[in-house]
Length: 280
Image (cartoon, rainbow, N blue to C red; front, side, top):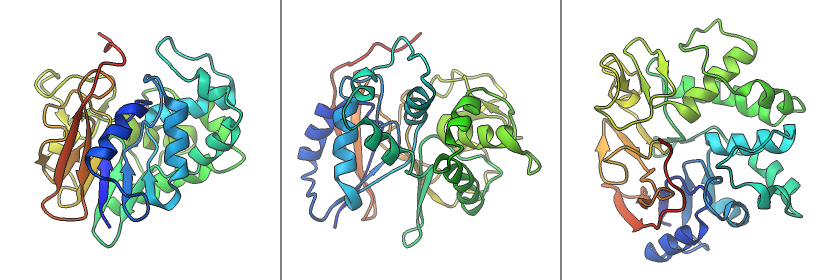
C-alpha cells in the first residue's frame, strides 16, 4: 500500500485529480493523507469534499482553518467573506451530510507505527506530540458535541498569544485551534504571531518559523503540515524533521504529494493554474 500526504487543495479538484493520475493512485489499496484546507477559495469545494469523503478508509484528513471557517459559516449563518467560494457547497442537497462528516475529522493525526504526525499549520514549541494530541482531542470532542455551534461563535480571534496550562474555556479552545490551524511564526518563548504570513526572512527579527525554534520539544518527531504557501521549500525538502506540503496550488504554484510509506520520502508536484490572486 502506498501512502501519500497532499498539501492544501482548497477546492482545486481538477488539479487534485491530475495529481492522483501522476502518482498512479489506486483507491483499492493506497491511502491519501490530506493536510487540511480541503475547501474554499478554489472553484470546486463541493466536488473536493464529496470525493475525499467517498474515499472512506483510504483517506485521512485533518481540519484546517478554511475547513473550520466553512463549518462556522454553515452553522452560524455567518456572512461569507469576499473571497470565499462556498455557496455551491452550502446549497448542495448533501450539504448537511458533508458538513457533519467534516466536523468529525481530527485536528491532528498521529501514525503510531511510523511515528508520523500530520496537522494543518504548526505545533507550539513547548508541546510534545503527546501533549498536542491531548489538546487537539479537546477541540475534537467539542466539535463533535452539541456545543459545537457555540465554539464557532468564539473561535475567531488572535488572543491569547501564548500557552498556559491554566487556560480555560473559549480562550483555551481558541489558542489550541489557532496553533494547529494558523501558526507560522512565534518567538522563542512561544508567543505566536498569527498574522505574519510572508516567507522566512520577511518577518520581524524576534520571530522564527515555528519549526526552527531551537527549544522545540517535538524536534525529533516527523511532522507533516500545510497552510504556509509562501515557504520556498514546500514540497521539496525536509527541515528539522518537518515536511511542508502547501506549495501554493491555489495561487498558481504547485499541488504536492509526498509518498511517506518509504524512506526517504518521494515528492511529486503538479504545476497549477492560478485560481485566485493572493491578497496583498
